[in-house]
Amino acid sequence: MIENLSARLAEGIDFFNREYFFEAHDAIEELWMDAREQTQRDLFHGLVNVATGFYHYRMGNRNGMQSQLQKGVEKLSAVPAIGFGVNVGKLLNEVQPYIQKDHAPSSFPEPLPRIEFDAEALALITKNL
Image 1 (cartoon, one colour):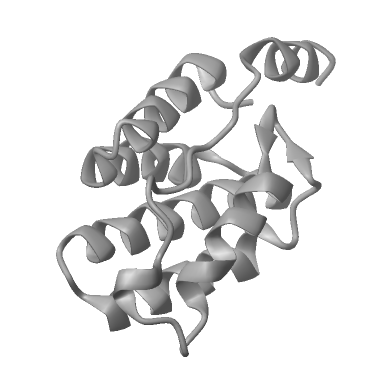
Image 2: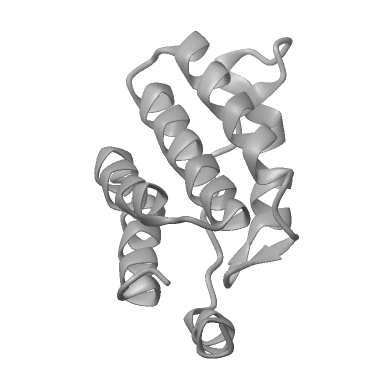
């Protein structure tokens, strides 16, 4: 089991939702490195990719953004719609416009997607592990 999972994930998601994508990447990457269970690894790896993608978006690197977001979508698609308190399904839907090759950068939705997270649901899950 990952030590302080709920608090650490909440911190990474808070960074992401405030658009501190570099910091979100670092915080969630630590969870990915600590995870042993495949669903957790896919969730954290996917979130790292999505954070990296939106970091590239803010830096004006469209190719890097789309590449990382696509990798994130692939990883997150292997996770339940609500995975470890994260609303993965909603995030996947909100990321879709950014990976469409035919969209002009000016047509990308703002504000950027946010991650919905229910720390209480995660606490219940981890309590039963």
